[in-house]
Length: 77
Image 1 (cartoon, rainbow, N blue to C red):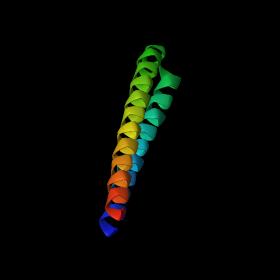
Image 2: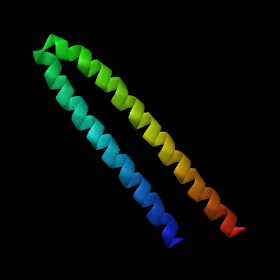
Image 3: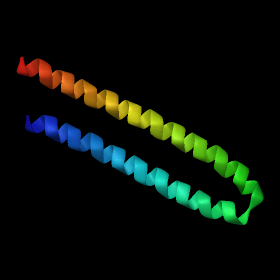
Image 4: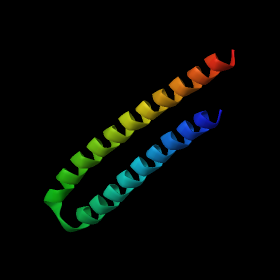
């Protein structure tokens, strides 16, 4: 049971770090949008890439979390 909660904590920590990095990058891109028109196209492209990576990472973490829950449930039975 203790190991199960450690895995959940580890998974959530990875999710939080990923969201923080994505937020910082979006903040930097928002500042760059104000100054340069060319950077606007670059920033929009990068934002879509970052959002796509975050979505894939969240999907991976949810799948990994689901695996831990199913393993835990099978050990209980």
